Image 1 (cartoon, one colour):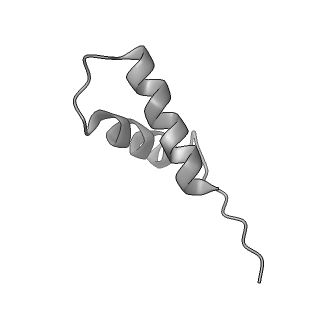
Image 2 (tube, rainbow, N blue to C red):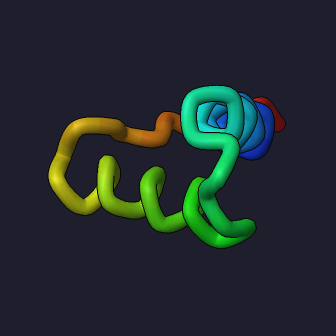
Length: 46
């Protein structure tokens, strides 16, 4: 699920900031995580 959520965040940022460079979505998401504003939850079954 985490890769799909990361891609959804990338798409959101591109929609709101079309002039942003290619690396901007990743920097934005990394900033959210670093600030504790987004926590990635990975669920796995075995």
